[in-house]
Image (tube, rainbow, N blue to C red; front, side, top):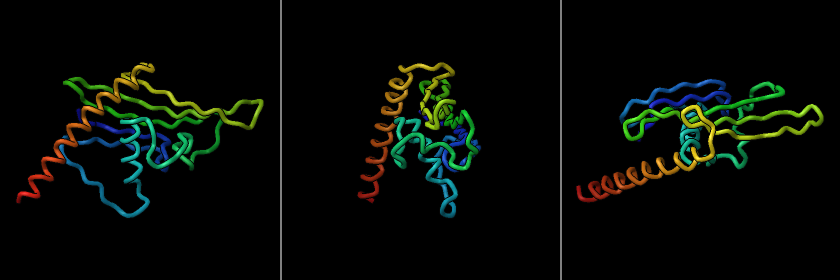
Length: 148
């Protein structure tokens, strides 16, 4: 399994970002506060549907976007798994009710364009297999480094 493309819309500091990932090791470099951690946070969110950086999902919406009756942030990941291409989209939706100043927040997950709860379980399983393979590779590289 590998990530082919990442698209962010109104996610954290990004109003829009599209990245194509080559199928090799990638290194992000840059000055502080340029979005390196935000990119990693978005990829991590696709893997486990929670943020390592904020405590509430509503904090993932772009804090610079103007207040509208409906505000939507998105993470879209295109990935290959078992020879097939898939798209996983997570939407963060904040809606203001006309009767109150309180905003209602919800999250929606779509796998290959279809909203479904079982998509979460399936993607977590695929990422778990991917992470276990990465862990085994890192252990092997560590052992090789110790032997050299």
